Image (cartoon, rainbow, N blue to C red; front, side, top):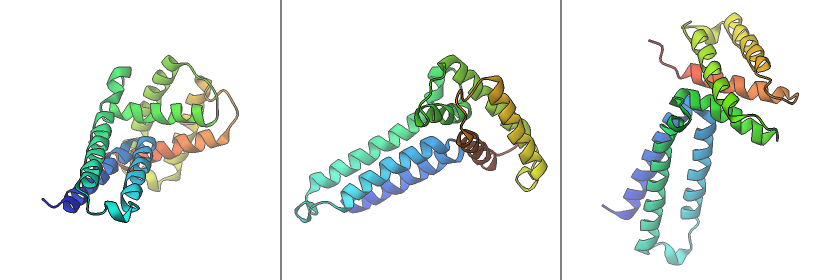
Length: 179
């Protein structure tokens, strides 16, 4: 197989795997998208002398393959925390917000809160037309605010925190296949 074709196929596969990740875990999906963009930009901006060197293609193919495996491993990363892939999506947004807004929150409570947020979103997801109904969206917002308050999260007053958690909840529900 021609090197550039192999690179293109690996890029397409990586984009597809990241797309699947984003459907449930927006934070990690965005994170992996950025990593992929860095690789692709570095490859596209390579020196003219490197364009025909086979090791440049091999290195790019290896980096893309490694990133595909990294994304693949993320699907079961919650196992170590005792949470499933969907709960891990909420864990990641909660953890990410701690870093972004510089506050500490106990790990065990973070895991428990992630499970509870997912349960709350699941309870609302049983309505097939939820995204067209403002009453259901409002109920979810209120439920999330009360749940976060019950857990003392965030320990700082930041409206942005609620907005970002709600965006993750909507993203999760939108891509959720209800059975």
